[in-house]
Length: 232
Image (cartoon, rainbow, N blue to C red; front, side):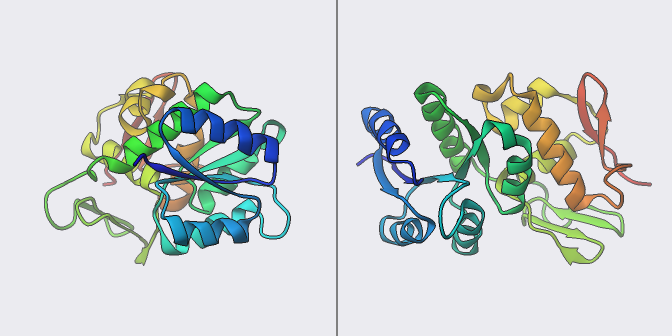
């Protein structure tokens, strides 16, 4: 039996296109035209990946994403319109999405992204020595325990955000290029998607930095990449 994909979208033509493309690659595909129906199929079929449209009647994509995140860490790919892409991407991250695709989307790109998020979800979690990996009184990160504390309160990172932070921390003080980050965190399918890093770093900073506009942990090396700075 192939891996299972759940598509939640109110556009029948899009669902037909997605089903055809994924079934041809050996996936089992289930579909729903609303968030409520999608949640019911989620519990019934336990899919491996969810493709979730932003704009739907009734329960929209944001609400549906939050409901899924309340019960599961399954990879979620949000589907958004091109003209609102960046705002939707940031909002999707806030609700726990792992990735996004901008409509209209080609079948090759769709299949590649599904494979990529599925592969990432199966990778072992970043590991570190036991106990606290880093702590300076404001930020505390235990990589092995997947625990991030900011100013004494636990902060929830998405799996991708955590992998990004862990990779930067494990190479603290060393600049990682855009290409290195894209390959190690997202996969080779994303090597040309520099906007991914910019958006995810922006969102990560808003979760862990005292002042995201003046970051002290995740530092930009202009035109090259980023590095993690251990606060004094």
